Image (cartoon, rainbow, N blue to C red):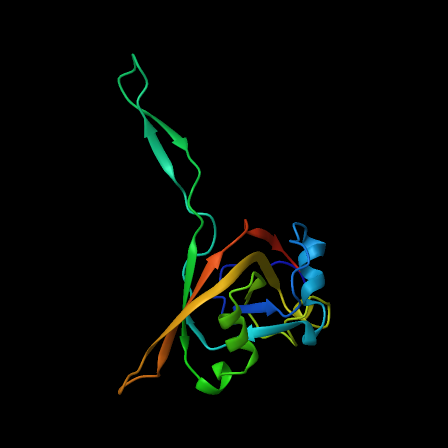
Length: 177
């Protein structure tokens, strides 16, 4: 397949975390996709209920210019965004000693793959038989799982807010064909 080419909900959006320690920070499509080649190379953060906007936020600054009647707008350096994901919390997936809990406890930089999908793929591996089995658009970044807080509920699913700090630029959009 190739990039998503039509308007539609990303009903199978997924966030994958590479499970290999980062010896160096990848900056190319090949560098990132090689971290997610096999099903055993990554873990999914599943049960995402709500995802914030992702990308570099604008930071437009008004600058006065001597002798002009109005200010000029310039694009200034923006602060690195933080991502707060709301997930339907399943305790067994985040249990002490588990893989996802280990990522959260380690505070180590991790490679993330955000995949926008309009159909369920065979897997989230970066191969034709995985993500390439459906139209896909993928963004990559380096970040850390910083914290998680929980919201028990008597009338809805228990939710948790997973906070990620961003440690690199966003790379993409790429597609797996």
